[in-house]
Length: 110
Image 1 (cartoon, rainbow, N blue to C red):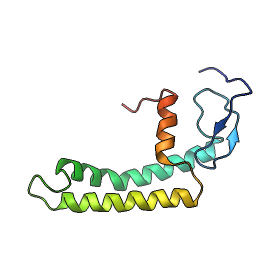
Image 2: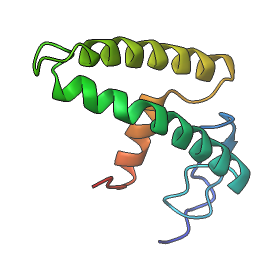
Image 3: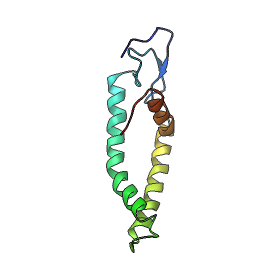
Image 4: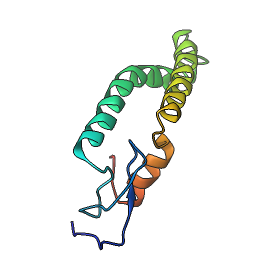
């Protein structure tokens, strides 16, 4: 990955500060902010993933004879709203904007 020109500016998802990236795929202003973001997303993912899978596989509780899918869907929606508010209160970048930036920079999750 090449070095960007000095005129290029990035916005750190964790602190929303402008910074000059050292590489064209740099998303965060420093390694501490990258670690904080990734640690928070890891914790959230551990909670959200089983709920998301249960909700999806039961079509939010309408298929498969399990009422857990509906509850998983409701709980997941509640968590997402809570996490979104936490991020807004902490003045962090919205998760959708972060994913948009990752895709624009060529990150491939699959």
